[in-house]
Image (tube, rainbow, N blue to C red; front, top):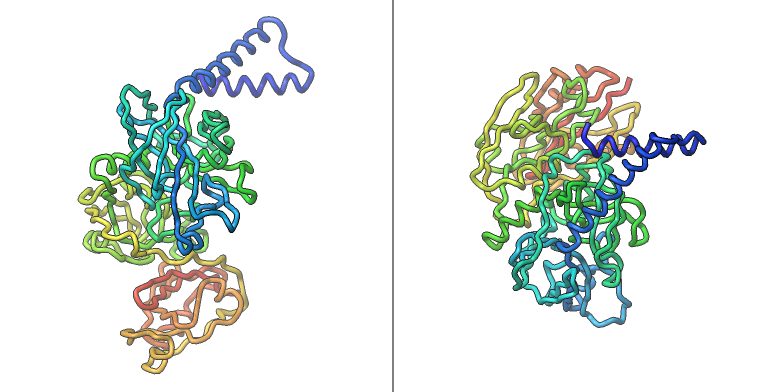
Length: 482
């Protein structure tokens, strides 16, 4: 057990004994106070180390009326405040930044500085500088800006892959305005791997660290720091209904942010690896349907890119690990791949049917941020007395009715009753091409195949239905009624 852990445990014990009216006396009391003083000095030491490396960032951006209405920066996740409807179309924003080099490179959020016309940086000692945007990446919400100054104090960068839930952290920034800049708050790492769906793009990479350290508008772009004084995250968002802190803040892991930052500093843009798969969480129903004893890994719903296809990945493969690191969330895979460059090789552990395979894939390069390989999230599944779908063979008439150009084989869903089938995600126009449950796998080319497959399904267990519509594929699970 390390020193920090011992300090936390002793603190809890002292508080408990005091509340019980049995506070330790004499030498034990002195030892307890000494431990508390060490713990206190750790916080004050970290604050002294980090605050000179944290900047306040003030921005101005002019928006036309159409852009203002479409992209109002006053999101509840962002460090800006809404303006009155009759205000001028010049947006003034406030955020924070992290000095990363002695010669003036500063890490912050894309939503702080990525679209600003004017960027002003205020240092810890009140000096002000005009900054230029080096580059910005909307898919990770990371930006790099530069001021012309030397001998700055850069922050020390930690390793976000080593953080653990429950460890102490500090957040530093300028919450709620310039007069509160260099504010330090403390808390713990509450969770890791959060996906908030706040990056409005199918390729957005979200793998946030969650903390209960107080974070407010203006903290965005500032550091989340561990008890070694190392930056482990870039504060980015809050969960709130009021626009202010309600208990939970979120930070980009520094390992991801640093990769993006290094790319921007070197190239002016991000060279992002691309595997080419659409993914779904393996929940209890998927695990049951494919014969896993417990939910683990991430399901490949479809192969949508050449790197995955060349490597031999297939729909319905389950990714278990990447480069030896176990994976259990789609956004975890996105984050791991986003840290790599085109041409990098990754080792994949894959479960296919009942076999475990080792596959090596060479990553490609994403050409455009506008294309999307993601499928809409599927709804929760509820039990019902029957499957609740009406299907028929695919004919030219049904293909025309549901705009299924080019599809000539399979069965098509023509009606979905309210209930479990609709909740599972079935929709009219879905083409069912495979049914699976445990070791049972049957390709569906006709109503006869479908009827045979349904008759073989075990009641009370989940079954999986592979569906497609155009280029999109889905993997729907539904419990077969008793």
